[in-house]
Every structure is written in structure tokens, then in C-alpha cells.
Amino acid sequence: MRHTVAFLLAGGMGSRLNILGWMRAKPAVPFAGCYRLIDFTLSNAMHSGIRQIGILTQYRPWSLMNHIGSGEAWDLIGRSRSAKVLPPSTGMDDFDWYRGTADAVAQNLNFAKNYDTQRILVLSGDHIYSMNYEPMVAFHKEKNARITIAMMRVPWEETRHFGIGIVDNEERVVDWEEKPLKAKNNLASMGVYVFDLDYLEKALSRRSGHDFGKHVIHDAIREKCVYAYPFEGYWADVGTIKAYWQANMDLLNPDSGLRLQEWGVRTNYDEEGLRGDRPPVRIGKKAEVINSVVSAGCVIEGRVVNSILSPGIHVGRGAEIIDSVIMHDAVVGEKARIDKVIADKHVRFGNAAQVGGGASDQANEKFPEHLYSGLTVIGKRAELPDHIQIAANSIVEPLADQGSFSGINLTVGSYVKR
Image (cartoon, rainbow, N blue to C red):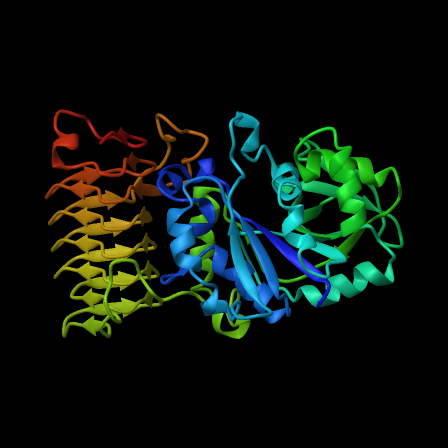
């Protein structure tokens, strides 16, 4: 892997994650308690022996940059190893911003040329999986490929969300469909690519557009130099609210294949503005925790069932959290009931608040394409009044306060502005 440099695409705004992506880049979204989405790809790169990683950021990169820091958490520090954040080289013109995945890599090829580079490994920063990239690079060299794409079988009903490859008996990609309505195959791209550097440079210079899937891959297939590297195992694209919640729930299912400890996933435990470590979890005498992840600094005085709690959460007496994902430093008031809720950081649930659960026959009134599966999403630093009742498929904007709820009728699929 000495001659392989990685580019990690981490600039997406995660629009389908709705308010969870308003204040951060998608790879910076918290996951599984104390982790962030980008931790999985960084850990994979570390375990694969990648020495140099360029992290391509664009949309609201501050929390992501703080999290990555020097790269020390993933042993990407020192004379021979580094993780460097590479924002767009903005100048006088608007086209200096990244216009797509291929354009982002094209703007940063000089970073790779600073090293003895023969191959470029392109990775996505918002997928949940464990993969050693070294066998994929060996496969790439063995096939004498110019482009190799990691691919796996997905359910046929999910093919419309992916780039789909059609392969021959030698794993050569002979046709490609980008997010087809009716796919010919169910072999989907994982967003992991190996390129020969010299070929990639030429392909980028003559590309017809700015994305790998839509443009560079299509052009290369005609030259019969693209191969599919087969992958089996757990992999999740958490680009939607439903997929994000489901991946968190998979962590609680021993049969899902999602195993953080076995995968050796690392994170940066340093938190901005926090001095020292969080205290241990404290569970009250009458509290109950069932099949849940409870992170450091949590105080549990109520009942937590099948849920993921990030650090610093306080669950009041008589409160109940069910099938939910609650991020850092939330406060759940006494006798509140939280059911199938995703709550961002620093949310305050009032006493006896009833949030989520119940009928979910109506999608969200403002974002029906984002929220329709019975979940409820509460934005960062929102404050919910005592005794408030918020039904399923509802969204509460970040920074909403108690006055935001006055004079509105909350029904299934409601949207609450700040």
C-alpha cells in the first residue's frame, strides 16, 4: 500500500438527512453513541495500511475538522503518515467550489503527486462498514485494471438508489446504470474506487461531467478496463433518516453483522469545549436499561429500551425512551415518553412530554420524501415544553424554543419552525 494515496470524500451536505445535516457535513453526524460516520472509513484506512489520506471537505466542515484534528486517533500522524483536510481551492470564480466527486479529486491530484503514488483510492465518508482495502488493491493489480469498484449485491427494490454494474465472467464491468428505475442487475457500487493515477489524470481531463458514477465510469467502460471487486458483509449507506435510524438499531441486533469492537473502529474522544473525560454512567435504583447503548456521562433515572444514547444524557425519573437515537447532552424530563425519535445534540424534552410513536399514516407535511416511516426528528438545541405532544413523522427545527409551539396544532407529520 506504499504507493497508494487515499482521497476521502467528506464534503456532502446530506440533504436527505434533513435537519441532522443543517449544521454539519454528513460524515460528521454522530453515530452509535460516541462515534461519527467518518470514523468507519478512517478506521478502515488505518487497518489497511494507508499512510496518506486527503480529506475533501466543503459543506460546513468545522465540526468535521475538529473531530479529525491531527489524525492521531487513527494513527495518521508522523513523518510518514497523515490525514490532511483539503477544502476547495476557492478563488475569484464560483467554479472553484467542488462540483461533484470527480471534480473534487481533480482539484487535488497535486496532493497525491507529492508522494510516490501509483494508485488513488477514493472513499466515501458516510458509509458504515468494515473493509480491508489491501486485497482490493491486489485484485486491481492482478486484473491489470485501470479502475476497480467495490460492489455488493443489494435488494432489488434498493437498486434505484445506487450505481449498478453489469459484469462478465471475469468480473469486468461491461455496462453501467446510474440509479436506474428498473435495473438489469442488483450489483451496486459501494462508492469505493481504485484508480491508476496516470489513467485517472487522463480520464479527469477529458471527462464530460463532474461525477465518477455518471461520467468517468461510463467513459472508462468503453475501454474495457473497469473491474468489480466483490464484497460481502455488512454495509450501510446512511444517507436517509430511515437508513440512519436503522443502522443504529442494527448495532443492537447481534445478528445484523454490525460489530464495532470486532471491526476495531476508532474515534476521537476529545469533545470541543469539554475539559477532561466524561464521568462514568450513573444508573438510579429504580432505573431500567434494556438492550441499549448508554455512553459515558449519562445519568439514567428512568427506563431506556432498545435505544442509543450518546454521552452526557440525563433521563429523568419516570421517563421512558424506546427505539430512539438521542445525541449528546440531551435532557429528558420526568415522566416524558420518547418513542422512535432521533434527537440531535442538546435537546431539552419537557416534563411529561409525549414525543413520537402512535399512528404514522401521514408523511411529514414539508418533507414527505424525507420522513414517512414513523420516526420523529428533533433538531439541535430545541427546547420542548412540558406536556407537549408531538406525533410521528414530525420535524422540529434546530433552536426551536417553547414559544415555537404556541398556537399550532400538532398532528401526524407536523413541522415546527424555530
